[in-house]
Image (cartoon, rainbow, N blue to C red):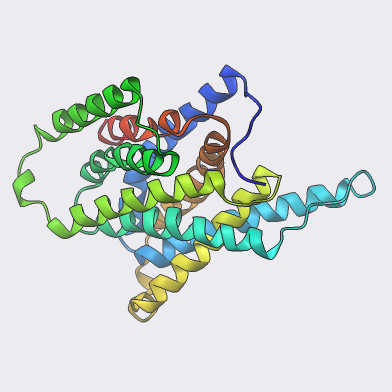
Amino acid sequence: MTLANSSRPSTAAVAIALLIVYVVWGSTYLAIAVMIETLPPLLSAGVRYAVAGLLMLGALAVQARFRRGREPAERPTAIHWRSAFIIGSLLLLGGNGGVVLAELFIPSGIAAVLVATMPIWLAVFDALLSRRRPSGLVIGGLIAGIVGVAILLAPVEGIEDLDPLGIGLVIGATISWAAGSLYARRAPLPSSQLLGTGMEMLAGGIVLFAAGSLIGEIGRTNVESFSIRSLVAVAYLTVFGSIIAFTAYTWLLANVPVSTVGTYAYVNPIVAVA
């Protein structure tokens, strides 16, 4: 089963899911900055998503145990896991991991503003895959979004001194996130959206942890230096940023046009810099 859903959800459900992604993900930029004050960036991001995925899959397993006899529990296939690892690599390693690393070099508010370029890549990739030109409404929205990004960046002092590596990491992250979002709509996944989301978070957590290990974060980690506020930030990101907001995002990908889903990138900076 692919992620895209043919049935129409209620307007209220879409509004609630969008509000969650708008507000919660807007707040995660500061939480990420706090997390990486004393924790290794990719390893902590990996733990965040792996724990979130395990908690969700564990809850589904418990639910299936209580429902035994009513209907058989869905078992993910190797193809489903392949999709989960591709999505986890694009969204969580390339997308979120790129932003986490970028915040080592640029302020969290600037990172949030630069992420607002993501809908541009989303529209470009969607047009290439569907072989259809974006509608005038979509193009107008993209232009308005770009203008909004420029307005938010204009008053920033010392913007010309921002680290190009940090900027490049964010732009690369937006490209990876857009590609992963579109792939997720077409990828073979379990019929249960919650099961698929749990698998994606676990897979993404594994590849993030592996990437952190490859760049030597384990050897540089000093557990004694971990601060309480950084650990609280990880807990917040795990529960709110991953379990709640990422689940809302994957549900939106399955139920509404990508142009609507992508609007979160324009709202997050407002929350992040508020």
